[in-house]
Length: 171
Length: 236
Image 1 (tube, chains in turn blue, orange):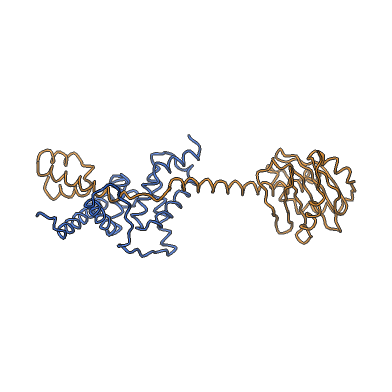
Image 2: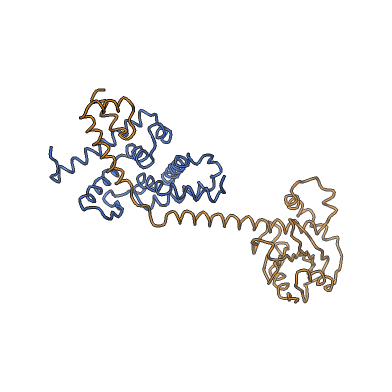
């Protein structure tokens, strides 16, 4: 097995971006997300010997991050985030139409209730299936699938509504 | 498969469809279009979700871990010199005590446990070693002392963890001090101040050596340490 250092660097390189994205969609604040990721990886470094299989690294990190996020609430660091203040990532080389749609979607994803937003992010960014999400969130699989359904349903409704408002609906 | 069930499946997990759903899609062009729509929508959601990570996140995560590890190693090294000093102290005070003591696998633990007990032996020791003798032994460390405060009770080589040093016992105005001279490059880091509720130890670096002076907390350890430091001079 590679040295601790090499293992750690490998998981940073492979997973830190997605972990950040998950953290961002969980707390909806880029600075808090950054802090969460830093703390998560530090704990991961300390506990890296307990990671037996690199394939389990992503789920392992998500679990650590969820715990870190929970601690944030225990410490009463509830940050009330203004939805309209979300920093949308720079989007280079996209038409203004695309950028607009992206921003609208971004806003609606952020607007989803956490119980719908979290499974969706785990599915789309994390690439986890229903069973894996159920494990990560301590829910049963049916509940997870229902929440995923509702998440997409709400997003689709929101987009269609927005398109209608912009006169793009050809209904 | 009825429409409701089909819709639920496509909305819950459009990219991971079971066989029944795939069959339903193959059999019905309307369902196929719906499936395409949902996949397309998922791509848009993915694009919106895939925000950029902050600047140099990877580099910062690796740097932070490196610094954390470095700090951890420094802390371990500091403990090393503090324990080593205590060990040498115990060894210097009375070898006989070690022989009669209960067996202990870790000499550092043993020494720490007996450190306070053995200080009483110092009071019985009325040796008087000349500065010349001390300097003869100090030649091994390429350093000399032009003077030493008080009476030199003993000056012996000591060895622990593969490092050879010299320890000197002093009695200055009734206060007992233990002085160590170690070669500098054998030690990773040393803590400038260490101690427990009875003793105080001060470490200083000079040229190729480290100087450690330990005394009782209520004694002027800093003064004695300074005096000794001022006497140091270098041999060729």
